[in-house]
Amino acid sequence: MTVTVSSSWQLQGCADCGVVAPSRGRRRRVLHDVSHGEVPVRLVWRQRMWRCPEAACPRGAFVEQIPVRVAPRGSITGRAMGWAIGQLRREHATIAGLARRLDVSWWALWRAVKPELERRATDESRFAGVTSLGVDEHVWHHANPKTRGPKELTGMVDLTRDDQGRVHARLLDLVPGRSKKAYADWLTARGQEFRTGVQVAALDPFGGYKSAIVDQLEDATAVLDAFHVVKLGTQVVDEVRRRVQQDTTGHRGRKGDPLLGIQTILRAGAENLADKQQARLARAIEADERHEEVFVAWQCAQQLRAAYRQQDLTDGRHLAEKILASFRRCPIPEVARLGRTLRRWREAFLAYFATGRANNGPTEAMNGIIELHRRLARDYRNRENYRLRMLLAARGLTP
Image (tube, rainbow, N blue to C red; front, side):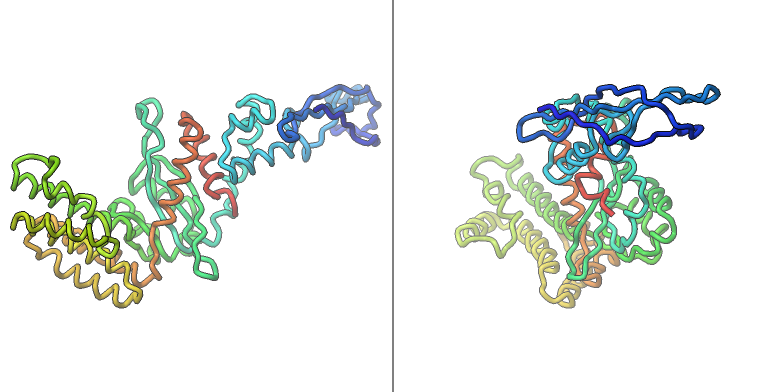
């Protein structure tokens, strides 16, 4: 579909000297607009041309420009660019797919969209009002780090609650590396006002992020993420099961081995087990008295999980304090190691019960959105393009 358009006539003066310029006619400029259903739409703009009559003026000839409708040298209308950004943000679209809809090349669309994303990314107002901050890392490529840079990126997520106590997470930024320096440098760049406003900082059990929080967010409460703590307990059960399997049979789990048959049951919550599963668990533990270690480790993991499931936060804290006191003295070495780890993170572990269940769960949700868009785009080679796309997809460019 082709639509021919032109602007209304008006007296035009030279932008440099102000002398009224006579018209030199029009020229046809083809623009790509939002498609009409499946039909591509082209606008043929009859663009006015003028020539400055002042001999000393360096401008000479110039043409009509309407920046609010189309960029001076662009081929895509502002309406089409806004539509494309909305599709990328809300509908999980790809640049290649939108370029086909607009009947342009990938590069033509990205050159139109990228400056707008960069403008939004540099707007510091999008960091205002952040009172709860989450941090996590993810791998953005699997190529050679010498050619594409660090594989890991550190992502900062806004976990601020609204008036109803709900979290509307949004990705604030992605920086290269997984270290104290990467996180601390980003916090320093945000300024003192931002750092003072952050009251809660959620993180996984990584000492580098904890050190950055201690150095840069002196007034914030560090909270150890519940998901990662429960995951540590589940890993302990797996380690004990594998060790006991080797000690009792001399080989890895094989079909028919009692402990191999319950490996998935040991990863489930006790309240979710059916009667048949509970019976299988009991038979496997009773098959050899040395299997009692596995059962004790599983009970410890269930106790750790139960602390987070308590309806009353005070009851949950009391159970967590019992875990801190008892796990490190357990005769099972894997459980004792977990107890020592939790004891080192004591304040951050117990902070969950003093901050209204603050956790890094929404940060993991942002990682899920990032992984989705990376798969849709069939991988990325440019880290800055990757950052801009993920900030848009994960609401990071919305103030």
